[in-house]
Length: 497
Ligand SMILES: *[C@@H]1O[C@H](CO)[C@@H](O)[C@H](O)[C@H]1NC(C)=O
Ligand SMILES: *[C@@H]1O[C@H](CO)[C@@H](O)[C@H](O)[C@H]1NC(C)=O
Ligand SMILES: *[C@@H]1O[C@H](CO)[C@@H](O)[C@H](O)[C@H]1NC(C)=O
Ligand SMILES: *[C@@H]1O[C@H](CO)[C@@H](O)[C@H](O)[C@H]1NC(C)=O
Ligand SMILES: *[C@@H]1O[C@H](CO)[C@@H](O)[C@H](O)[C@H]1NC(C)=O
Ligand SMILES: *[C@@H]1O[C@H](CO)[C@@H](O)[C@H](O)[C@H]1NC(C)=O
Ligand SMILES: *[C@@H]1O[C@H](CO)[C@@H](O)[C@H](O)[C@H]1NC(C)=O
Ligand SMILES: *[C@@H]1O[C@H](CO)[C@@H](O)[C@H](O)[C@H]1NC(C)=O
Ligand SMILES: *[C@@H]1O[C@H](CO)[C@@H](O)[C@H](O)[C@H]1NC(C)=O
Image (cartoon, rainbow, N blue to C red):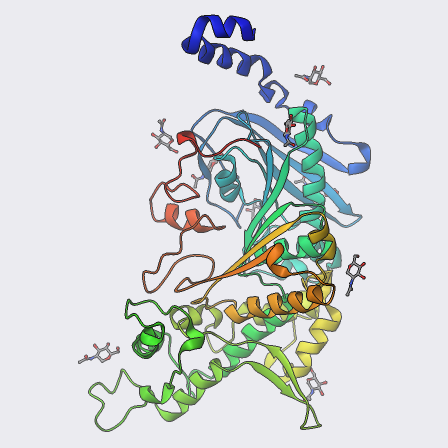
């Protein structure tokens, strides 16, 4: 065959490649029967669906309330859904896209919030570059703010917290190897928020799963993160109190932060390069007799509320010499997104209250007004349902097998404080440095000036770099976006292993 090719030249060469493509195309194995054959009895898994999708096709699942956005503009591929029994009372599903034109690599994409469902759209972004791509449902069916599934359901908490991603990855690799006849050369992970936590936790607890991990804005200390959202919501309540900051006020605060902080990097370009370089004075927002617009300034109690939102949570023990650091604070520049961390109707966000009721305490009657105090934070860490926190800072095994971790976090994130990423990095630094390992060898942390939670920017700062959930943000607004800006897979993105 190579001899014939050389004789007949390029045109026929291309034609024969197509013929070879058909004769070798794995899509003849795109059936429930054949994919089932790649799994074993021990896997406790059942292939629910498998079929081919032709080039430029789309796919989504009606009833996927967590991820209703369909994957579109797909390359020709095989799609399958697998149901895995994870315990006598729990199960999760995962989806796979197996592109006909495979780049020899494996990619798992993450989830967000408390979402339960397969993230088909994000899988599509990977399949467009030829990755065999998977996503797990995490073991329940719900939108991101709905935690009612968790009550008295420790097995499903474990699935969401980590078991489903690891289990799905292990089984999906068996499918990939069976389907293509070769294991993937490299395995990657990409996710943001809860997805960032899933990625970091994989590096910590399942260091063999991925060679490279992209973890955005990780909710790595989930127990504190959720209760922090309760705390910041409570700081700004009650709505008829003198210190209450209505949602509309945050745009005004944001403008003042920009006015005071933009110059701190030496260039007034509408983007705060590093909020930590700014010495912001909320007092300048105070209403004075000479304030031109008495609706665009703050009362003294409102200034006090704002100052609290910029303070980290620390607990002073009975012994006044001991301060315990609990969780960081909103960063300067995150004001426009801050209200997303608050609730409504005189309640803090369900991210905090429903987390405590359904996920943490299994008690729908739990009342933050009477039961929430600093002890709740330590209690949450002690209970740690499902073992959700990614706080095993020893990445020794991951580092030893050549794993690489890239973490990023927007400086204007109003849902997960940017500083939480710094804390994770610093803790890992200490743990690894004590073992003589330089973090720079395998773990990089990037802060993105002006970027909100995972994507988007109030200041029109650049934020679109191929991170998780970024192209979906654009597609929701009606644009056909390639996951990596402007890089069309068909135009020669590096495809080799
Ligand atoms: C699919 O599975 C069936 C039954 O195991 C088998 O006979 C067939 O050869 C398989 N097809 C391919 C393309 O491997
Ligand atoms: C690809 O699919 C989209 C819909 O998902 C459609 O609008 C577009 O026309 C299709 N392009 C081609 C070349 O068929
Ligand atoms: C998503 O795709 C499914 C089939 O794959 C289709 O039934 C559904 O209507 C699509 N949803 C949207 C929002 O386009
Ligand atoms: C998830 O629950 C919704 C109801 O909230 C239902 O309509 C949908 O079919 C369910 N989806 C799956 C995949 O079970
Ligand atoms: C998955 O399997 C479990 C049994 O472990 C079953 O209860 C559940 O209904 C199955 N889910 C689907 C979507 O088939
Ligand atoms: C990549 O995978 C292919 C098969 O899929 C294999 O032939 C090749 O040797 C692998 N390359 C490396 C560098 O591992
Ligand atoms: C005063 O500020 C409020 C809140 O920003 C705004 O809606 C209103 O238009 C302003 N009034 C004037 C006269 O600028
Ligand atoms: C905190 O609240 C719990 C009840 O949720 C209570 O048992 C405990 O005494 C409180 N601790 C403090 C320091 O107020
Ligand atoms: C980190 O993990 C490695 C591998 O499991 C182990 O040998 C080492 O003792 C651990 N170090 C610390 C400080 O926990």
